[in-house]
Length: 218
Image 1 (cartoon, helix red, strand yellow):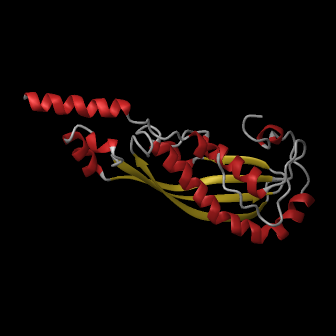
Image 2: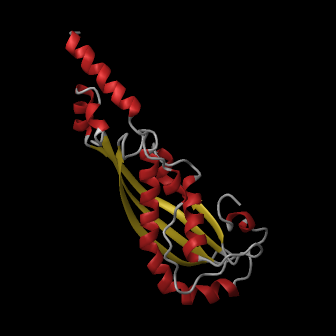
């Protein structure tokens, strides 16, 4: 290794040491866009099935349920600490994640990661996900099924992107939220029909809704 290469290497890593860390994913994890349907559904027991996400390297097993609970609390259902009138089930049907820009990663390594100091990303994680929300009454009778497709593209970068470990998980979470954003207007249209059917079906025995209906951290 030549003297000039050693100096360049030391300079690059000193810049990396002084540069800001990757963006934290915690604010994005806790944030669900507020776009409540006009006629909220009565409180329901919320469940989720991760489906093919179980084979993905991104979302954790608990993420689909957490995302759907937030969506229900913020946009879909009435708050309650007692009764649940039926069920809402979030099911991931299909998922595909690809990594884009791998050539940039090779370029970054060849230049000792120096371009990352100036915001050039290492790569992107892009997820396309199809999901379904099933609404059933307390006896398990299906009242409606609603499908949406969500996509995401999350940048891996040290200056204004996410870390290599956080990016795939965040890509899956954003794709789930975008799929729910497609499902939300369908539920809005169906809410006038669903609400009386859920109420007429009675309440769920031993609901766990008292914990799931509260905002995170409470």
